[in-house]
Image (cartoon, rainbow, N blue to C red; front, top):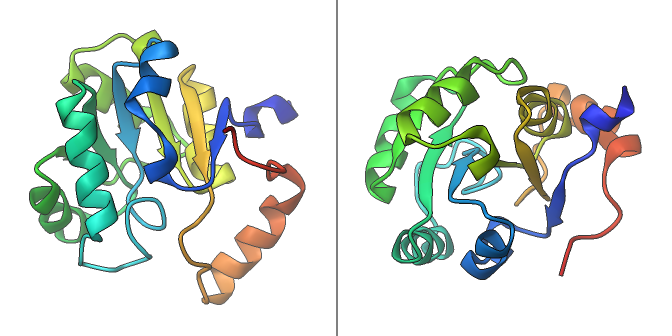
Length: 164
């Protein structure tokens, strides 16, 4: 049961994931979480590091799609800035958002991985879908009480250190 909370791969941050690593693992597409993975929580500005990383993934032929539990008004402007498609209201850890994204990407489950910073949504959801999970540590800790509580509950499941 606890294996559902264990990520397949671990990186410090999303920009540490390289196209070379993905090619070696036969990963052709990434489903990307938004908040605290590509930018800080509720930040409408795309960091240059995320823009550069997205561009490098596109140049390497990696298909990209945001899968977020956020509503369209949050996700749409961000996805437009990045020039990538998205699934909003993904209902993670349920698998419906991942199913929609995989279908729209035109790839097989074995060809994609999901990237995110939360064990109980991103890792659990992708593992339940049968998709490889890539855990990245949050860009910045959230300060709200619900997030602090969730992060405290995740601690026993957090990986020790990233792949290098």
